[in-house]
Image (cartoon, rainbow, N blue to C red; front, side, top):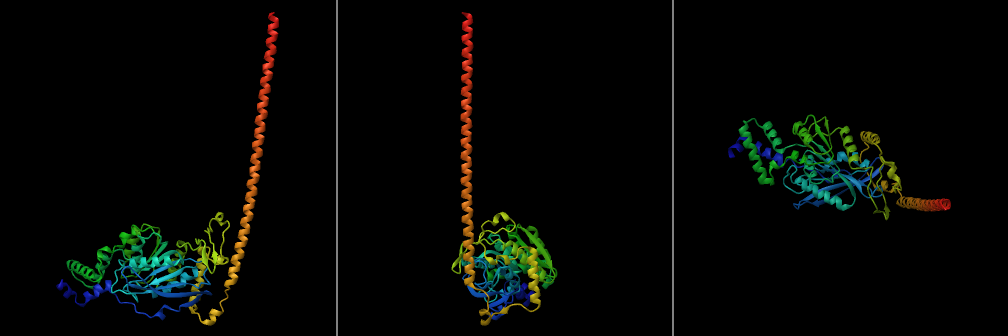
Length: 450
């Protein structure tokens, strides 16, 4: 082993560090952007905090959501963004501009061993899935989230697959640049860095495995995403960059071929770390809009601003389910079809190109928000009263209909009984006549005999 280390020299340390200790993304809080901002005339906020995972490590988190006054529903869909191996939650900033306008909140965090979170090493999915589990548990407890999706890139995509097979409640996943086997990936990287015979390379791989086991406490052979993909049934959108030289294209194909759930794949321009084109982000946003069921808000009887919003299942595709729905007035502003989604995203891209991105909100802007909670609550009350009146009318009409139907049934029964009685009387009379005739005939026969 010492001979192998001397053969590799300083590059050996670079090799195992590339796996479990890549460069840590260092950033400041202001790099996360303003904590209050505006997109398409709607106001949003970012909240920063920390949660603790099973290993008692702090994970630094950020949650982007609408202002309480702008919130259309108590519980909204949420996409949890999972960053790459040498990145951080800052990576999610490029995606919030596409998701927030669609009424989808965004949650991002630094994996353990990354960014500002605690931890010395990463594990390329093994321990990171426990971080995701801690995040999902936190979101469920807040009662502010309905459906949840995962958007992962590189290590984040692998983590999503390895977590997805144990949590089928996840509504959808976007998987960008995931590898199918860590063992295969390391062998490919070793061959690229050094030109040595295969038997030496095999020994080098074993050496890297032992070093990682000692330092990070996990086995490289256990990081086989394709084995988890076989058991994962969550709808997924795969993505791979055509010029990715870090994770070769066959990894995406191998995962896609064995993935058990509904799936689609997109091949985009760029390399492993390049920013993704806008058409892919639009497609991913539409994918989440559908899988997170943004149109079908399934929130029932939650307390919000002192009044209860009762929102029943709204199935736009089935008019039969539109009976007596109590829906916020603003629901008509939602996007009702894929074409409208594309238009909305296109408008947002135009705004972005015109440098109308994330506008920080100052006190003057906050004062000028044209939003009256009292008026909204009055409208909600009036809508409820109208619906209740309609319901009472419908109930009375139903009761009247049932009474009429009951009376009709009774009258039919009486008529039937009368007909039966008359038929019985007719039968008796007929029998009586027959008997009389027979009696008369008998008397005549008797007289003749005499």
